[in-house]
Image (tube, rainbow, N blue to C red; front, side, top):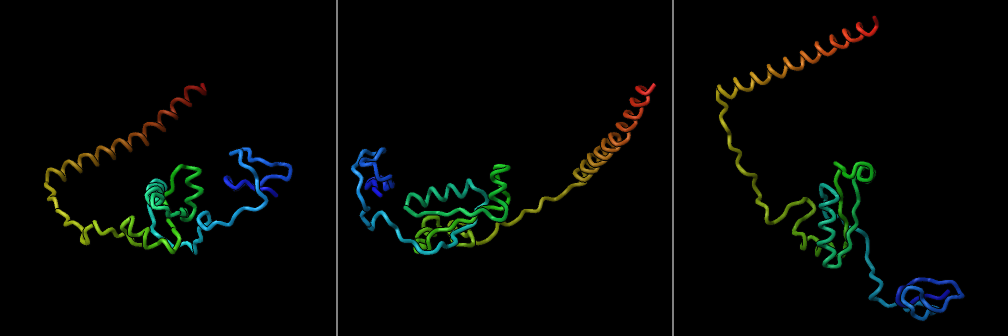
Length: 168
């Protein structure tokens, strides 16, 4: 079978020129090493929250010619198709030979730690709750209870009245 040396597409016997690039077809392709990259197994790089973050990291690693494989967690792939998002997140994998380079590029390790991030959590500031705040909260809570109770009582009563009027 003839092959296009540029496009690397296979043609039927009766073709002599490539329909895409108009090059003469050859019987066998040359086995050049620069067109074939040999990678070993995939290695886990990082977990990200969604496909947007995964695409950003994939683009960043793509600038350095590092291929990235995105694997959705659990039913995340189906949820991305159905809902456009997934709460399960995405795992990113790269060839194991390029794992160290990829980690250096995104400056993170498999735990998600980034060197620019501080090791400690910020101190939490306690805000005192005053009696006025407590009274305001209690007033809003009681108002919400009354609204819900009125909805649960008045709507069925109105429905009963309307049904009674239409039956006559």
